[in-house]
Length: 247
Image (cartoon, rainbow, N blue to C red):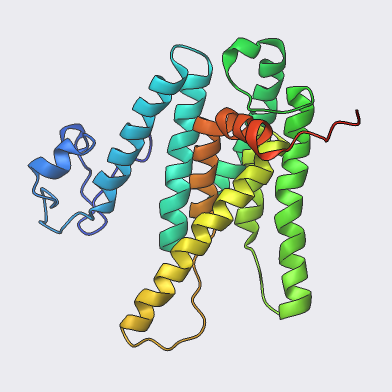
């Protein structure tokens, strides 16, 4: 049983189980608390809908394997990270702290049971890929933050981002960390530029526009989880030119 029970933040009445059915209760209640009538944020059904869609996609992608429940849990965690970071500019330690050792433990499972689908492309044993993933994931963003402090006199990355990328490195290995950083940077650049242009159209001339990086890392982690093998196959098959013949 989950404790404490869900409560309305306004009237603090406990929410009954029939008012806590994902998406359905929100619609039936007209997006309002049954007791006090205060509107319920649209973020709740949105998070539930995205999580449900990801669960279905995980099952479609991995089938009946050990990876399916693991990646369902990871997907839900990354959705949580995304919305918390967008709202509060924080990444919950409750996700990253247990996530890092869990990813390392699962790499041991992947080493002995490759049919589990728990590991993405790597050129080392899964456990070593994951260990290097933690070091590369956390270390790269940590060094970037310190470099930004020295050169720009301001923080470049939050420590939550460091822990999040370390967790993703534990789950997917060090080659995937590089892919995640690249994908997250591309997505972040597109969204950042679009956001700045949108602010300009509203007459906002403020030069500094800050956006959390955690959501982009989370989306990139999901991309690698679902399509990591295909991404690496594409890179090695089409992006690396064959060496010229010496004959």
